[in-house]
Image (cartoon, rainbow, N blue to C red; front, top):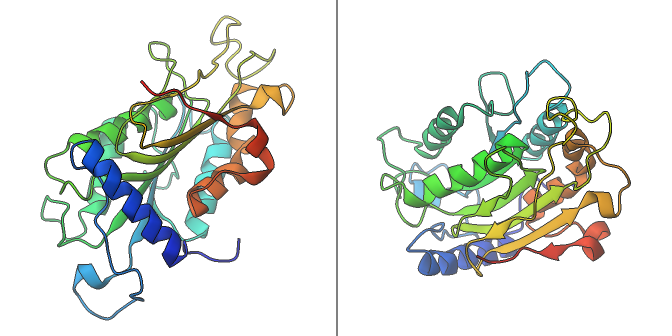
Length: 269
């Protein structure tokens, strides 16, 4: 992928779609901008091209282990491709137990002028979210917090793309995709693999993501059972295995063509 920007026509379609979601979910979307405008010297945020902002949240693991390195590499690759990556210090992804810190950092990135509001006085930030394991559930919560945050103008509360990598929490195995998410993809494994990173800590049960539920029919949502076509896939294998597919999802807001035959639509609840 040679371009660091989504084509203007694709962004136009995205913004129209998010406006439709706003109507359906109580006014949560991304404000339209003049997509023909190139980078300008003007200080007017409305004349700036939209920024693609990415926040990643890791699983419940020590950052020095190998568990989340595939996630870190994915999010750094998106940053190299032009995304503004919301970092946790030097880390590419936020710790699973720091959802509040992650949300605060995302808000600060969107609140470009630091006035405590995200509105037309800030340049457009098109939000994307990626989460692995415990963090996969967290980013659905972050999307819902965006949807409800009255400090954010309704037209700025949308999430353009969300990628979930085997999302799992002991009390909430199934991810629920909020209505302000335009596009979502989940990559999961369904059979515990012996020796997987989650095997010992779960007494052999393993951490296996379930199919997600979309809260709105307006959300384009697909999920993939990696065990069905990629062999024995461990919980901690998912970020690395799905990296190329996830980058296509984020950069182009479309399905990964080589896996298209294995995609299933998320049920709507």
